[in-house]
Image (tube, rainbow, N blue to C red):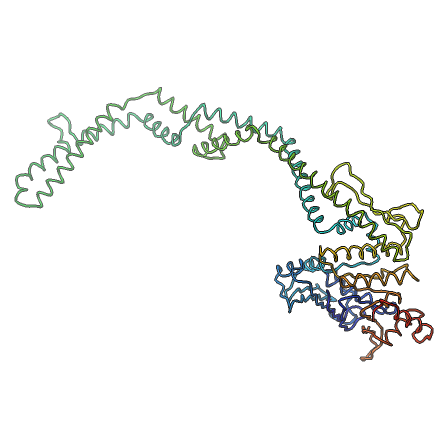
Length: 575
C-alpha cells in the first residue's frame, strides 16, 4: 500500500502531504483545482516521464516523495533490494525530482536509480486505471491478460513456461533454416578441407621436417667446401705422412704426456697434468675417428639434393596454401582442426539431423504446454464470465452478459494457441459484440471495474497473487444515478481486499470512501498572487459540505446537504 505522498511545486500544488487510507481513498475537487497533479505525482513515482513544464512557475524543481509499504516477500521488495535500496522500518521510500531545466532524478530506498527501475518496481505495486486504460481494454491483448490473471498463479507459471518453449522453438527453426541456407557453403567447406587433407596426407610431413630438410640441403649443396674444411682439420689433428710436414696435434699432445709421466710420481701437479693430457688425447682420438667417418661418407649426391629441394618446395607450398604466413607446425595444427571439422560435418546423427531432432522435441514440448494453457483459459473463461456477470448486475447492468471467447489459431503464437476476445451483450436479447466495437465509455468503465472486483475477490479467496494498489482516474465517467452508487459500492468492496485510490466527480462514489480528500484552490499573497492548491481530509460536516457541492455546485444548498446526508447514511458507505 501507499502510506503517504508528499508533493512540492508540481503544477498548481505548492506543497501538499497526502495521507492515504489502506482501504478506499477518494479525491474530489473542482475542475482545475489540481486533482490531476496528484495522479501526475503518483505517475512520477512509478517511473513516468518527467515534464519540465509541470514544475510550478518560478520554481527550480518539483519534488514528489512516496512511502510504499509492500507485504514481506513482495517481488517489488526483492527487485528494490537487489538495486541496493534500504528499507525504512519495512517502508520503501521513493523520491522523484523534476528540474525546470535539466534532468530529473529518481531515488529508491536512499539510492539513486534509473527511472526505468521505478517503473519495474511500481508495476508490481500499483495498477492505474484511467480513461486511456478503458480504451486499452478494447484490445485483444489486454483482454487476454485479464483472462490469464483471472486464471491464477499456476496458470501464469504455465504460460511463462509456454512462452519460453515457443521462443526456443522459433530459435530452433531459425537455426535449421540457417543451416539449410548455408548448405552450399558447408559443402564447399567440406570439399575444400577434404582436398587439403588429401594433399597433406599424400605428402605426409612430419613435425620438424622442415628444419631437417634445410640442414640436408645446406650439406649437399656445399660438399667440396665441407670436404676441404674437414680434411684440413683432420690433418691438423692426426698429422699427414710427410717427413717435412709438422706433427699433428694428437702426436704433440702424446709427446707432452710421455714427457711428464716419469716425473709425475714426484709432484701431484704434474700427475694432474698427465691425467688431463690423457683426457684430451682420448677426446682428440675420438674426434679424429669421427672426422674420418664424416669424410668417408661425404660424397656429392646431385639426385638426393634435387629430391630434398623438391620435398622442401612441396612442404612450403602446402604451408603457404593453408596457413597465413605460418610454419610447418601451423600446417600440422590446421590438419588436426580440419580432420575434426570434417568429422563434425559428416558424423551420423549430427548437423542437420541433430537440429531436426531438437526441433521435434521443442515442438512437442510447445504443443503440450499450449494444451495446458488452453485448458486453463477455458476453465478461467467460464468462471470469469460468471463472476463478472454477477458484478455487472450489481453495477446497474442487470441484463448484461460478458462472454469470453477463445478462437483456435492456425499456428501457435507467442501467447498460446488461441485468440481471446471479450464480448458484451448489453441487455437481454442483444447480440454479443466485441468490447472494442459495441461498448460505450460508461459500459467500458463498469466492465473494467467488474473485472477488477471479480479478479480481486478470486485472488483474495485463493491467496494466489498479491493484489496491487488500484488507482482509478474517473472510472465513473459516463455513469450516473443508481449505477454510480453501485460503482461506489464495488470500489468499496474492492478496497476490502486491497488499497484503492479514486479520483471522482460523483458524490455517490465519494460517499463510500474510508478517507475523503478534497483539493481546493486558494490565493495567497507573497509579494504577488500565487495560486496554490490545498489538499485536506474532510470528515463530518465538512464532508457533507463537499458532497453537497458535488451534487449541486452549491455547498450551502439545504436540499443538496440533505441529499449528501442521505448518501452518507446509506448502509455500507464510508464513515
